[in-house]
Image (cartoon, rainbow, N blue to C red):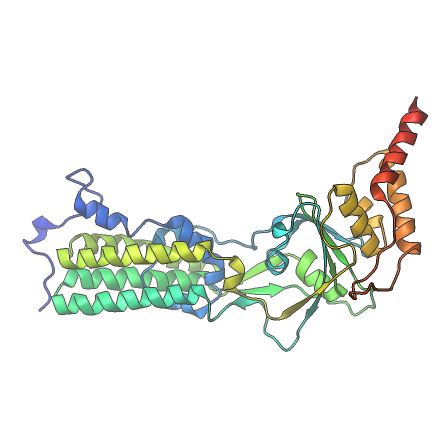
Length: 384
């Protein structure tokens, strides 16, 4: 038989009323609302999966009850320039960042990749068999175990707490469900191949060889979140989830000692699991199989000692210096303008299509550091 409140209504305990500082009750209840940062780390990609609809325990559910949902995925720092198209963007789209992870490049390095889209694969979404699915199943298992234990122990308050706190996650999942739609080109006009150059703040360059469709989809068009529930319905769901969360915490505070300890153990395990998953590479949570990346290797390698060498290598690979001017990537001075003009001529006219003995592509031989020194010396002499 279930018992609901030992000692009658006068013994009802509210978490907002703490009669003893740092009481054992308060410590147990606080475990249910700790861990906001680890929960928010993968909240957006988690809402792409149907597993987010499972009734389950989650740490700090109040962190997911927001007044407004993100309209776009968070971009990364970097400057994106179309080598031939002239397109320019001051940030790197989220999916492009996941695919290339350019921040892991060493300073002043230059990497070249070719990317194509596999039309037989589904669009970008959450990985089904990934760490976030494990968290959802773990939380659901915790809810199921506490539900059964509440019935076995005859603890009605713990039973209500389990039901309400578990359904909070389901309501949040319904309100936050979304799909990622990468915008595609609608015009059917013929356009040249669109090499894309990404310049990162630490002086590294990533050169992507692709067609205009992939360039528009991944690097220049905005990544918008298409939610399955409208804003009004989302606010109603958030309100209901907030009320359920508050009553769930109250019921948990009036549960028996045995179930409170079990809840505490469950939240300790869940917090540790969420923190571990938040520390994993973000790419593990996404299904990016619709894009295929192949490395293009050059005889000069990827590493460089200076920004000047890295910039020259990027110009040589793209066979153009116009994107440098369009993106304001190099310093603006007379010496640098002369250097860029000569670098562009050498890259275009001296480009070699051959390979070395290891099969790596060759680049024109030119000393970027010495030529910049020569132009700087000439500028100083002319000014004097």
